[in-house]
Amino acid sequence: MSSPSSTPETAWPIASDKRPIRRARRWGLLTLALLLTGAGVRTYVNVAQAKSVESSTHANALKTVLFTHPKPGQGQRTVALPATLRGQNEAAIYARTNGYVKAWKKDIGDKVKKGDVLALIDTPEVDQDLAQAKATLEQIRARLALTQSSLQRWEGLRQRDAVSQQELDERRAAQQQASADLAASQANVRRLQQLHDFGRIVAPFDGVVVRRNVDVGALVAAGSASNTKELFYLAQSDALRLTVAVPQVYVGDVSVGKEVSVKLIEKPNAPFKGSITRVSGGVDVATRSVQVEVSLPNKDGKLLPGAYVEVALPLSGSTKALLVPPNTLQFRQDGPRVAVIAEGDKIALRQVKLGRDLGRAVEVTAGLSPKDEVILNPHDTIEEGERVAKREVPPEPKPQQGSASKS
Image (cartoon, rainbow, N blue to C red; front, side, top):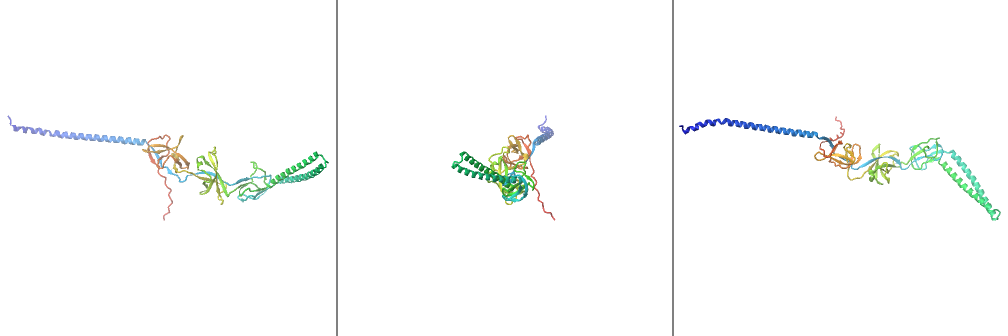
């Protein structure tokens, strides 16, 4: 029978056998942790890559648009309208009698006063008719004197009852007929005398000779029909006027006495001041415009009748217009509109009210603010709320001023 002290000696080998098991267990747990960590990292990388692909795919699916900001317009809005300068008084001078041009006294560019002789017309036929009419007038005067003396004698005879009342009435009728013939002959003489005086072509007002269409010896005829020749054309140049057609939309900005600016095409930087003197009381249905007359002084003669000018009509309005490029506009049945980029890079379609078309820019009087991002060249299928990728148009380069050459 063994002693109790032998029991611990037999237990030591059993404890030494458990150490490899524990070590293997630790390595297994470590390996499992490494595998789980690798799987988690791989899963994270796959999710991140999927999100990146989805994000890039969504970004590539967005339409890229260019936008710009509206620019402030001019402080004073005006509208330029074409017109032609005319003299305060203008007249085409025609002959009032038939004949030949004997001489002309004034030429183109000459300034004339009222009553100055422009040309002389030789009227031989009228002169002969006038001489004949004067001779006839003398014959009628002689016959009238005879009838008057005969009537006086017959009235005396009638008082003595030497002649009948019928014979006295016949003498009175003869005297009255002679008086009427005298009046008719005098009127004919005055008519022919006026035709003779029309041989002197005179200026009807102070002005300048714009055209001369006569030469010595030319045959002229009375009248102003299309088959007759215009002798002279006169224009009063010290005071000019023009008539301009103002569109119906600007009728509220037109009033008598309002000052306007008139510019010559060859001198755009030297405007002249004029004032509105007359405004038509109705709208022309053919052009939807109102006729407005403007007067302007021309004492120094710098302006010429017949010149083409532009009239700058000031426009009223408390709000200043904004300028946008023409390729930002879309025209629909309900009016013009623009596409702007709203919050979240989404499209917003806005109705706008247009002002003047300035060529490279169009005025917008309502519907936009200076901070709006207006899309350039919006496609026809653009929709409200559509999300886009935006990019601002680079500013136009400013013209460089020439620098002095370095020595």
